[in-house]
Image 1: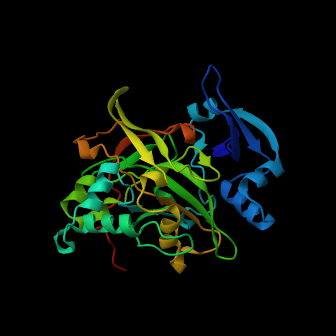
Image 2: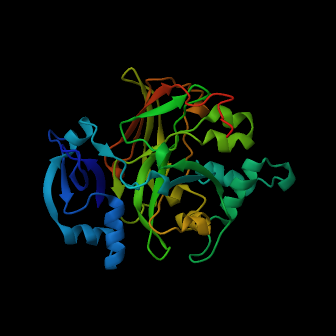
Length: 338
C-alpha cells in the first residue's frame, strides 16, 4: 500500500491511497481516505484501534478520488508524514556510513588487515558497521554515525525548491530511504512506513573538516511523495539524477535496502530511539538511512535552477526538488542583548 498527503482544491488536507500511478495515457488515481486529514492522525487512530495502518485505511474506505497527475502538477502534494499541528514536534535526523557501496568494497574491508590506529575515523566506523551492524534480532549491534538535521521547519514538499543560504558552500543531493515514525501514547515508536528522501547537505563544508559534519547537515530536505506501508524490500534499486535546463547533467544508480547495507534497519532504529527524549508521545520522526551515491564525489558542482530527481519504481512517483538561492535571515552581530 502507498499513501500520500495532499491538499484538495478547497485547501483541505487529505490522505489518499495511490491506486494507479500517472502514465499509460492516464493521470493515475488517488482515493481519499474517509475522515483522514493527516497521516499522523490516521496512524494514531490505528494504534488506538490495535491494528496496522493498512487495516485502518481499509476499515475507513474512501469518500472520493482525485487525479494523481493533477495533484502533482498543481503542487498540492505534501510530504507523506508530518506533524500537522506543530512542525517543532517533527524531528529530522539521519545516519551515515551504513551502505556497502559495492561487494568489492565489502570484500576489501574483510580482507585488508589494516591496523586500527592507521585508519581514519570514517573507515573505522565503517568497518565497525560491517563487523557488528547486523546483530541477531532483539539485540543491540554497534552504533552508527548519527546526526540531527532539524525539525519540521526544514522540510519542503516534493516538487518545492531547496532554499540555499548565501553562506552555503555547496548544494548537494543525498538520495536515501527514510523511515517515518509516530510515537504512540505509551511512548513506543511505531514505524508508519518508508519513503524516498533527499537528505540535502553541504559537502564542501563537511570535507574541510569532519567536525563540520554537524554544520553541513543543517540544510533543508524532502521526502516522498509516497509512503510505502509495510516491509522494506531487501534490495531497492533506482536512479539519482540531476537535470540542468531540462537535460540530464548527471545520473547514477541508487541502491539501498538491507542487502546493500552494513547495518540492519532494526539496529539503526534501536540506536535512534534508545534515547528517552525521542519517545515523546505524539511526535513524528523522520530518519534518513544513508547512501552510497553522491554527485559531489564525481566532481559535480550544482547551481540554482538544477533539479534533483530520485526515482525508484517500488516507491512510485519520483522525488524532485530544485535549488533556490535565498538571502540569509541573520547577519553577524544580529543578536540583541536584553
